[in-house]
Length: 517
Image (tube, rainbow, N blue to C red; front, side, top):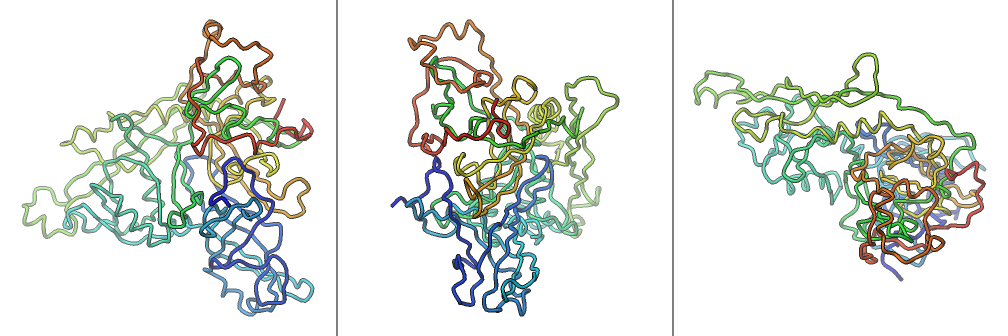
């Protein structure tokens, strides 16, 4: 048996629910255990990338066989609920219920429902650990900072912070994390009671090739896709952009990072596999911005002119005032008036440190992300169904996709491009006719860092001897090609390089309810 699920496999048509990491029975067995009922849902994500991060929320109803919990349903508050696919149906096993789970969190609300055959039903709402990180407002730590300077501040992390953050997250039951940022810290005062999520969401700058960049399309989420029990759950982040060349080689179109065929990669599912409403509605951007503003701080003494001895006696040696502003204009069509997206960044400008100058920050990433949002027509909500999509499409986490073959490419060209799933609702329903799993997602227009457009002359230079009829292009795929050339060496051992075993082509889903042309 394999020790980990394959990325290219669909989710198995079965599911287990765990209470405090103990599996609950799938049917009534006369015990005192709770029995989970179908359907249940997991809601996750945000409406816009710069919104405050929401925890994923599980809504599920259970039968209380022996009346054990109905007498005091509030006793379930704070207990742990975990949702994991029945991987054993695919001949795989995992070290822990958390490995390749879909949800892991804690009960935050309990409701008693009407009797069901003489037994009580209990409706539970559980939130993942982002809820804990949102409410974790503890003081400190202030590693790497002079103890005197840090007095009065909640956090003031300097220097190497990996061990500090790891220890901090371990307190909230999170053994692994992968978040990236580079900044000149602006510590919050202890009286402001910032949470760990506040701490993360304010860090909107990082270094790329030695230059500081300001970004607004950053997303946070909890991940469980790891075979090692000591590495789940993970707190992670990602940026909503596409950063992979799509190469026309002649008979095939491949992705430039792992050399996988466009038809085979989970990041480029054919539009014929994606379900939409029968009468879909395309909308323009709800928010239209002509400027983006980065607010930042300056540091000063709380008691300027005081001697060193007098400063040492002060409650705080320094003060930070968010009084700086850097505004970038976004190239747009003519609009009446200016609308500005204002973001408060954790950034401090020090007169004595040239590297901290806000004028040196590259604003182009933020400008490009907002311009993409302004100019793209919105797709309707999309549905990924378990029998048509790989398992990765059903995870409650953000991911960036292309949908070659979309029927909107010709009628609404402003829909063409990369899309990031930034929120949605995953439903498990045992009465589903074709699959028990459906994932209805909200997608956001993702900026593309690979914007090349090959010309006819570039295509004529291809040396492939294959004839046109040997091409395996998905309809509309040429719209996404950024360069031509020979295919890079395939990296079959990479997790991203999936096979066709999970693509489920050939489904006779009617065209009016698919994203296909």
